[in-house]
Image 1 (cartoon, rainbow, N blue to C red):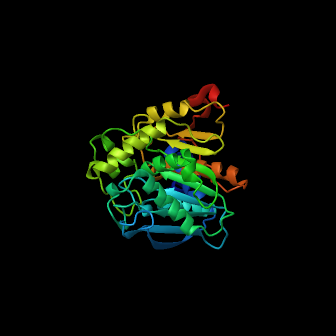
Image 2: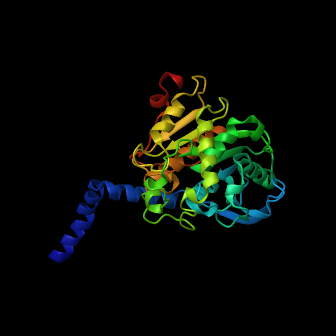
Image 3: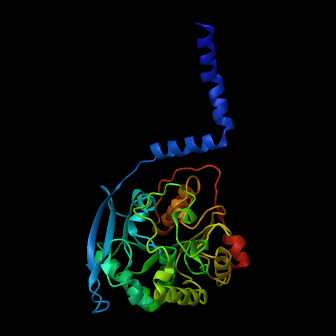
Length: 345
């Protein structure tokens, strides 16, 4: 063996393991790749339908686009009704939906009026209760097995709608079945006056991910493009802040950083949670201090970690052990005791 060959063999045998060991970012990347390869994936079958909504308001012709994502070759553990944010669309969340379907959940979502591929009257013409009624209509029209658990989930503005539905018995009791759990991802319960810092929604201010897997950029990018909607959003956010969540409804709340979320006022949101009654022990609160608003799009390790925590929370609600990859260096912290003090033991 030549000297060059011996040196190459030495580098491969002895130096490479040390390089891997001493490089944290490389260790994280290798762990992520191993998890991605070894954890079994069950990709969803997907179906899109056009759902007329004229029974909510007679003059509202047209339809909303509904997406149904079903675990492949298996029955679903439960149904997740996901409400997306303002300037968003249902097919902007493929990684989140894949995580849920791989864990065995059926996911239902839809495009709000003025968003995505829905074709109906502008969102300005809908009251907040009528927007909630669309969500309820979608759930009832897509319910396949009513004995399945129903989880209501929402991100940003969708999280605000989910919150208001859960806070009003006259709304959430209209669903085809009782709510099993509530998932709130950076919910728009306390919003900044100028979203994104200057009033314009941009991918660069929504996520640290330079290439998020979205179907389209934020549209409509300015809430002021829908002035009546913007006013109703602020009114609904104020109403949400005046109430706690139902004490018997298990709830998962994911927050971004205090300074890095330019859409939702995280400190104000934590103050709202802090006022929950001490009897409310079924709320699970997580914060990712360096994350931006679109938590599900955050790059490794934040995005995968918070998605795994959601699955861990859901596994408790449906009493099933779901397979999760193990991630090192947790980038998010559980705030249950820190934020609520003696109110949440």
